Amino acid sequence: MSDERDVVLAPWCDALADAVEQEIARWAPVPDLADVLARAREQDPSAVPESWHGEDDDEVVPLSRRRALSQERIDPGLAMFAAALHRSVEGELRERGLAEIPAPTRARRPVRTYAAAALALAAVLVAAFVAVPRIVAERSADDRVTPSAARTVKRVTPASSWRIAPPPAVPRTPARVEPAPATPPSPTVAPTIAPARPDRRVELDALARDAESLWRAGDLAGAERVLRRIVATAGKSARAELAYGDLFALARQRRGAAGPVAEWKAYLKRFPRGRFAEDARAGLCKHVGAADDARTCWADYLRHHPSGSHANEARRWSTATPEP
Amino acid sequence: MVDERNRLSVVDNPAAAPREGAEDDELVRRAVAGDERAWARLYQRHFDRVFRDVAYLVGASAGAEEIVQETFAAALVGLRRYDARSSFVTWLRGIAHNLVRRHWRSQSRRERAYDRLAELSANAPNGPDEDPEQGHLQDRRAEVLRTVLETVPAQLREAFVLSDVQGLGAQEIALRLGISVGNVRVRASRARAVIRTELERLGWLEPGGAA
Image (cartoon, rainbow over the protein chains, first blue to last red):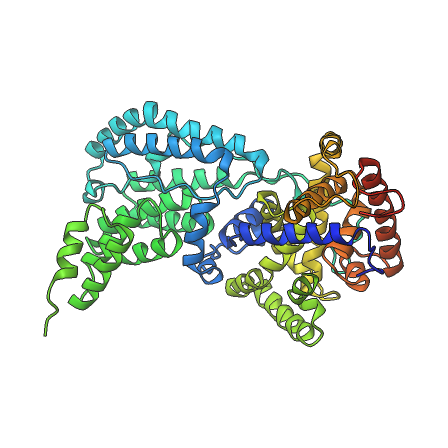
């Protein structure tokens, strides 16, 4: 303590300290390394190696803790709205046979961005009701033009479809803050504000367009290379997830049914509850070698997706008699 | 409670701090060389600590998390400029404090705080002899003090929170804020005077100091 405690204020300080400690325990912040990397890339793309994507994040926070937290940390003011919207969009997407949107998790942005987030959700709703029918029609046309086994994979939706109605950008902290000097920082010196760099999202969109063009032109290896760049740099963002969707289809097209095994594993590590998680788990279970491994794999599938579209097959495996 | 809070600060643990500082410097060196795991380890090691510091200053909230994430992002961007003259965690805290100050400036909550204080003063206890339910009184005190702090100038506020609420030593605060120990004491003392005056004006303290 900097000086003798003020005995009059001490009970007030203790009350505030107790309140803060309770808040900290209740809030239980969730580290998100991928988010840090994405923010750093927005400030200075050259500051973060392209090979970094935050997958070590899983080592940072036990998944069980993150799961528990995600259920209780949605901003109460937004929760009802988000849940209703989520249900509505889910219904629309299910009717159209598209992938589910992952369950909403706690907001990481400050309160002032909730309005922007609500706008983004509203845009998704508009997309579901207005744009998706058009997208589905366009996809049918696409499939006729570039037929491929990959495109017939149920519920694996190339990112290009989703880019038709991208959510509006949720603004991050607009300015860049220079780190404090190694010497102790002076509180009288305001943080240096530098002009924002070009938006990373624009770059990622350009990469996605490149991948799509290459794919359409038949350069599958080139398309795969570009998609890998996206997943390597887009952290846990929706863009990375959608790029994975395309990678699954592309890998299947290039290397057969078991082609995406490595991609499924990498995807599940980064998006254990992502929109393609069920398909990825099922795909892995269908391509494991030993029967024992398959049983374990399907049991894991059932644990995550008890009412999933492969649940019957999973139950058959988990109740099958082990070979002697 | 103060003991518990201090127990969590490695800086207050002289035996652990040098070893951890050396490990941090090695992790920084590896991260600068492109080792993602080293950066993940630094993030893991200091996330809770930085969040705790920020939470004491702005409350445990999405805003605090935002500041912590921005702190680590800014640190990553500037990692090559870290020269180990201070410990890595002190450097991180310096970034966090700059961001907290910017957060305070952007909030401009002083006018709303005065309105809130007017409401709170209407509910002030009649005097020290009044014995409301103790838990409720603690909650009210926390709420009132938090609101009063929003009206206190930032430099005084942070010195007071770090010293009197978080229970840190003057030396540690001086390192974090980049000011002298004497300056820490002056700021904390001035903050106490401002806060006591405000609590007296609101009827939460009797003139002369009884709660």
